[in-house]
Image: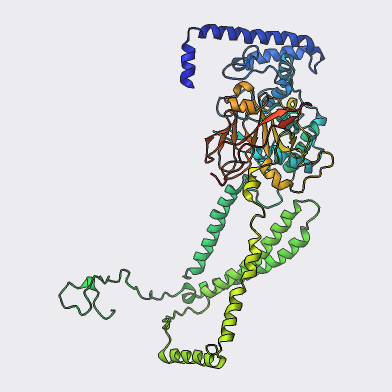
Length: 262
Length: 352
């Protein structure tokens, strides 16, 4: 595969192909941008926000995502990802990315809420995409029991039945959901950040999403029913605790029982 | 042998009175060290230590008294209410109290015995395992007498009918436990799932049918066959769990250009592909899908399948790809199966 790519790059047509595809992408990007600019009046954002967002984008995002958000080999295109994606990535501190790696890490948030809204306004103006959910959509007042069932079917295999997160392949992982807000959970489901799949409204309806948020809110706000939850990361941690701590205690008592008093 | 010199300690002098042969009599490799010299305990030497030990024992018993009282207090003061988490405080504190109550008595008693009770060391040799000749002869006499008095050897009819009764007694258990084996041929049961031509793919758990247009690229749907769950009233088929365990499917939409296999494209629909969710290693549900790498990870033993390449195994202990369910759309745009799985789902099978 790699050799094939290298030989393809050396081909005499390679330059023509690269230029043609570059023109095509930037042309298409421009066409989309101008086309949406005319319709963005009907969106939730003002033109001033879009303009401010564009400036912020050029200063902070364009080096990886491209000047027109068309994407580079370092980062995907942002055309069509929607305001929800921007809000999730930036307000959770994942973007702007600090370093490349198997997975972009959470770090302190870099922008104010107003700036995040402006960035979202700019990306939203490029092409229609999922918008930031309203408070009514993300309030934890649904059916927690139903949300629990949906969570176990759709989410628990990666995020763990208790929402504690878990490992994926080659250094990637599903993060813990214990600190996640309803808005973040909702946005993650509709946009599928990084390697997470997309759960659109046909898969999990807004009601389903509200129920899942309600269930996670229940987990977040209620202490564990058992004693030590050992971070809920599963049988390995629990087994290690029993084998080391409890068995150690039993061995200690046995030694004491057999020792002579001095 | 104990009266002779061990062979290793005496050079060979041709005057052994035991058989030469091949046997090598090893010297005792671990010499019996005998009893340790008796050490007098501090509590026997110093009255101050004795007093302290007595106080410690009493303290342990007081700890036990406190623990038992605390258990009663905890049970009343931390009741289990309708809030689920109250179970934790109730069981934790009640258990701690009872544990202190028992451990206090146990540790106190052992500490008392070790520090304050008489410290006499006594060595008691083991008695011989073999009975004396008189005891053995008497035992045989009793058996013979019993045989004679009961007529066990003399009364053939009774003896043989008893043998028959004993031999037949376990048979009901064999007939009973035989029914634990599968009632029908397991090969046929495992070879076929509920999927068949024209059967709609439906949401797990609601049972609502899925349109091809419902899937965006990167979508993952957890799918069960139509008829397993009734979306109208939430009722389900009688053998729902058995059928779901075989027929569970993961439905994913990829960009068709990302799919490297012509067969996978042909069995899918516009980049929508359906694969069995049952790992071919030991049957865990495989559903950890990574949108960008197209990897499907099994959480049990990290088998990794490449969804863009016929779900071939790229890592881990699984030895076969996940079986693909051929799908298409019906006249109304709903996704339907083209047929059952073309190979048995799950980890192992008779012809493998």
